[in-house]
Image: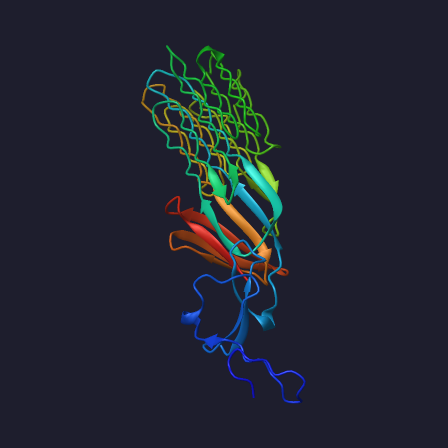
Length: 340
């Protein structure tokens, strides 16, 4: 028999005796093509460089191959505008940007971070946060315009533009790859414009014009989970009426606008929807909070996804794929690791 490092050629019982050792004894700086016998696993292994992260692979498993990942990332929704006392309706917040695409990946570790929804207050709405997966981003929706009798606040731009506050027929903001915010109305019943929906197909927010409510624009529909679901609807504008009609949030979690002397209604969490605008006839009222973003990853069931400790996620099987829905990340340093 051969001894370590020796090759016996031309004999019926010839063999190659590979360098051997435990997993802990692997070479610190291996080269492409290095091969050894792992006494811990009982397998012959080689140093594979066919992935984003080079690694030791068992010969029986073969080389790594790339695989497709479909990803949906939604930015956080903007909050609705606030309404100090004596004012009319504020604008609804815009829905976050929606990105739904498929790319080729290899094993390795990738960054993930969810954008938070904007927080409502008495002031102009706050834009939602950016959602990130690897190098792909979805910006947050714009904040709704404040309802103010003296100096109307400009709605913030974002995935979907924020709606305008009622005073001075304030024009809604232009969406970035999303719908535009609606225009507020300076005449009774002083309606705020609706926020634009997120995504390229997001609809415009409706104008808050005499007798017509400033509804939020619809968001974008995706079937990544196996069902058709809307994301990033715009928030409805506030409305100086004690009984209605009530402005609606756009499909995709947008918060509805307030009626007389109400806070704006919050968007649905993990939809990227915009918050509803407030109405402050006699009271100080805050805009509704925007909805937090979401990340959904659809990967082949031959690939394992492992998430860092600060990630909240759930998984379901859809055909030959696993769908991972990420609803919270505790910091900007959270990750997902793909392995085969």
